Length: 219
Ligand SMILES: [Fe+2]
Ligand SMILES: [Fe+2]
Image (cartoon, rainbow, N blue to C red; front, side, top):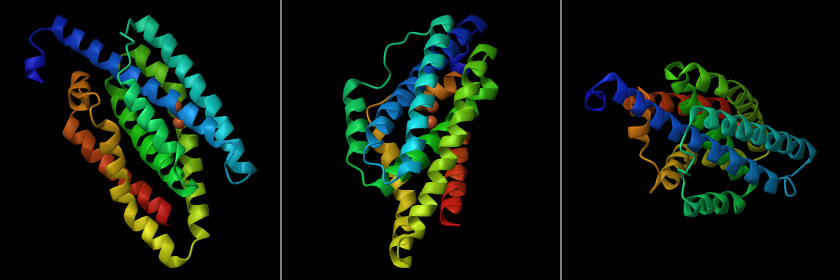
């Protein structure tokens, strides 16, 4: 960190560049989620699921619009952080998933853990960025709540053995997915450190959050 802060001016540049990249990444993920959820509406198993997905599509599109507006004001370089190949890989992954796996990957991994990472930088953010994250992060709580309750509902339909097997594989599933998505992607440690976050501390927070969600799903 100290090497990145030779003087205040440079520190501010590092902050703005890093925060800008994190904002671009968040916006790209929201837009991908918007597309992924829109595609899933037709094959969702029942009307409550279709309605929740449709609502989420609207929410994510609003998040993209809010973030785009803020990034223009903030003067962010809006070049994509995820490459077109990575975006395609992510879309393909979700497109081919059975419903139960879709719920786990969208809501536990991307929504719950992704939001936790975004939440962690809110206290470090400048007032404008903080305000831009207000509505999106509030909506993400609804998305996570839907995902967890729907996952519990689906798991309750399974035999005890299948339910236990699914739950037992979840931690590895989350780890594999995070690794697959981040492969060849942005250097998150540099970006989070650039906005003043303690990256190792953040990883610990995410692990704790993961365990908390897994407990909720299994309860
Ligand atoms: Fe969002
Ligand atoms: Fe969301």
